[in-house]
Image 1 (cartoon, rainbow, N blue to C red):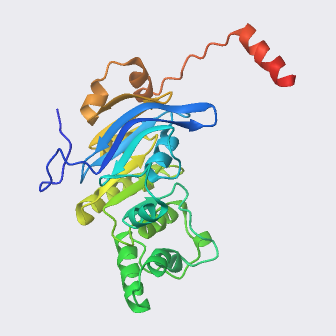
Image 2: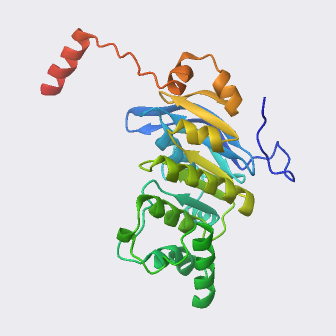
Image 3: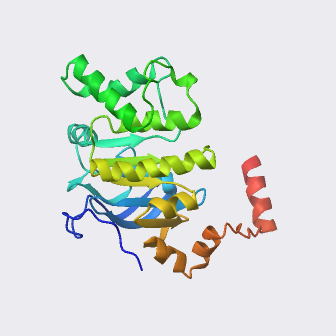
Length: 275
């Protein structure tokens, strides 16, 4: 059975991220219940689950965009649930986030989009910023596209441009939301290879939220599978494939859930909404 591909110089017990007994939701609706997980330095952790399982909420919690009702989330030892805005800002400068759709500003060129974090958060001169931007574009196989507008890029190119912006400040922690969403199979494979290369070249710890099984099995050191706001299993690819839990088997085999509808409860819900 394979073990996580940890960065050699780092001890396995070191933790970049720790999520402890986290429950989170919106208003009266609880989405996550008693979540516990950890990510070690140099690891690629993939978070999976069906629609509504709580993947996005967990990511927002870890990024500090939504504070949970209870529990702790430690990043490099800082409890972000109780951190000040100043502490969170300092931490976020050391993190990169690649959003699902690229999240490029349509009014700026590709190059200016990538330069934005350096211009906002550093005192580097413009020449140095331009050099660093070209280096990241080269890394993403986007050399020569600096002056194009986001609307002129394909879906895969937008993903890579967004990734270039996410790593422009050389973060040690990278979050990637649905990297393969909306991409053709060949482009998806290229993006998977790029994620693996980034981990090796920049010594990054990477957290990926995805529903793409093939991609997850290729890049992950460990996988967390969520179901209805709870963790079903955390394990290596081999452990996930060997899991006997019916929910995990159905996810791997893409078996649709057998949804039972209680007619009486359904009617009551409709009449209550109408009233």
